[in-house]
Image (tube, rainbow, N blue to C red; front, side, top):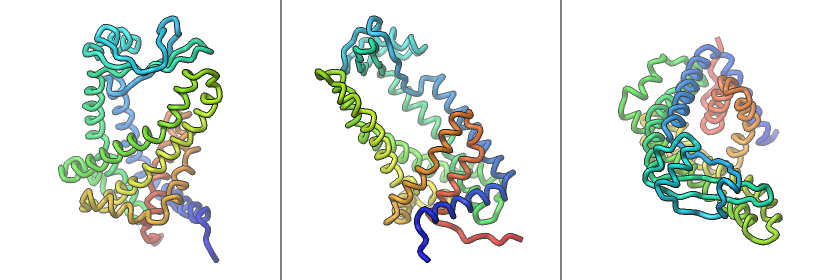
Length: 307
């Protein structure tokens, strides 16, 4: 009997859930460590100005047309002060604005030159702190699928062994940059529609089109990201793999199955939405469920014997 892709997805998801409950305690412990460190890293990123922010302002407060504008140090400092980041505006920067006359508002994205440097440094620190732990936890999940509970010190091994730390950091940097570039590229048509709708006469149709086009852009960017994503699972499964081998083997595992892999990860979207609404608490289940399902799709280990 032919097994359809949807049946295969259900089967591997069932095995992932069964493995989670079989190794419930160690699974929750390592997942909690990952979530806690990730939340601390996000807080550090926001407090230290390691991310970009946009704001929506009244046209009377910010009477700028749609466009990209150069801002001197004084203007940038005053604008960033609204976000409690005035200290980053001393070198000036650029301001992206999209004006909506019908509602009397302007969407403003300030990008200060010092903020760009700050974002690169802060995000580098965040990756250095979180990447080794994420790969250590992935290795634990792989062990659960193989019927093993690996010692907790194996997680810390991704920090203490500088060779593993460098590999985890390198792979994660490549994936982060690739996802950013792919997403931005795929969002360009939607952004063009949104901007054009505020400039051309009777641009309502362009504005209406911008929503679906932006959504398609997000999906296309995510699909491109999926092409390289298996590298992290290859490295977590076999830490002795080189960085180049991790990416090449990952793409080999996806040969002829890219769309199926995309559908698998897209099927977890409702779980991610639920986790967002409940302050990431459901991630104690969602993260191991998703990661073990990915392992099972890409390179499933044999079913362990249950004594």
